[in-house]
Image (cartoon, rainbow, N blue to C red; front, side, top):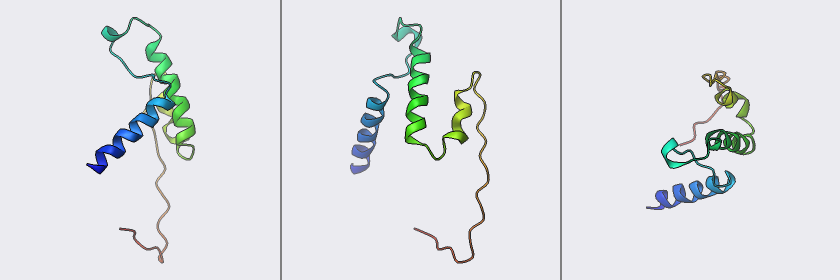
Length: 84
């Protein structure tokens, strides 16, 4: 139950950060700019919320979208400890 509350809280924060913009079906909105406005807001939100990894996912906002590429992480050092 606590997990659901966390998800709901995170969803509320993202919804507020997006200025209330959500993706809608064409039947749900008469605004023809709704999709592009939501993409723009999502792009702004991701730039600030995911600063460290934004460049890896930026290709999702190209027109047309392209599959993101990510670099393979550096190998772990021999003295690295697993976190569980």
